[in-house]
Amino acid sequence: MASRKKKTSPSTNVGCLVLLVGGIILLVVFAIKFPDIKQTLEKTKFLDLITQRITTTKVPPASKTIQTTVQDAIPTTANPANFPTPKGKSEPSTTVQALPPVETVSSIQGSTQQISLYFPQTDENGFKMENDRISISKVRRTVASSDSPLSDAIKALLAGPSEAETRFGLQSLVPNGTKLLGISLRGSTAVIDLSEAFMFNRYGTEGFGAQLKQIVYTATAFTSVQDVQILVEGKAREYLGGEGIYIGKPLSRNSF
Image 1 (cartoon, helix red, strand yellow):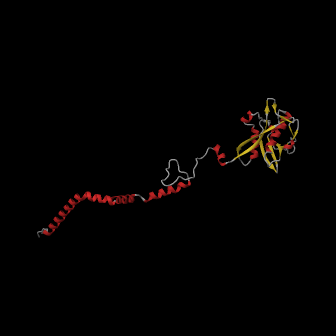
Image 2 (cartoon, rainbow, N blue to C red):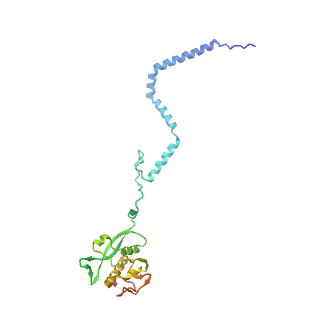
Image 3 (cartoon, helix red, strand yellow):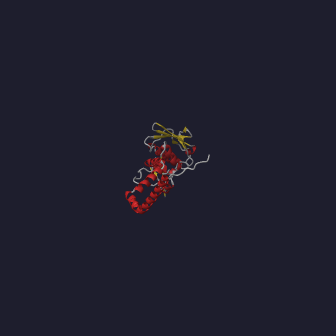
């Protein structure tokens, strides 16, 4: 059978023509009225609202979370030099300091102590004397504190006067090479164990008396120490030196 061709009705053609003519008329009217329409949209800020809506929609929710996390952390630390302070917020009062050098840690933490050391003093005539005995002078030093300040003081005494103290004529009559082997407290008595070098002094009796006086005065500068028992190589000795200064019992400042 031969196919039949579908005929377009006249009413359909007329409807399409009307729509086309209507669209053309709208375009012409829009083109003529476009300046007025644009002015109206600008006055109502309609375009700004549409733009803001689109921008807000594009911002990922995670960015707000990240920003909140950073801002919440700022008050607990200082604002780094290269981290800008947020607008509307003052810079936190707390600060983070860089890790200090080792030699300044003690002063920052306040962990220092003062110790008193005793040394003979000389002038143009030699050692200064008092009651025909070599006198000693007190010097104060600030050193790092520790759990054993008495031990620190005795070790500093055995090391001798500093360069500045030497310029003022201070010397030590404790024999060179004397080492601290041990120290302990028995009540108010400091038991100080020294090496064998402590037994020899080239200045004789006056030298032995002065070296003992240096040890006893330095130890009894601590209020907890009333007297000192000298040991040599861990043993109690009766006399110090060949000429004999008795050290078989604790010595106090009144012993000199």
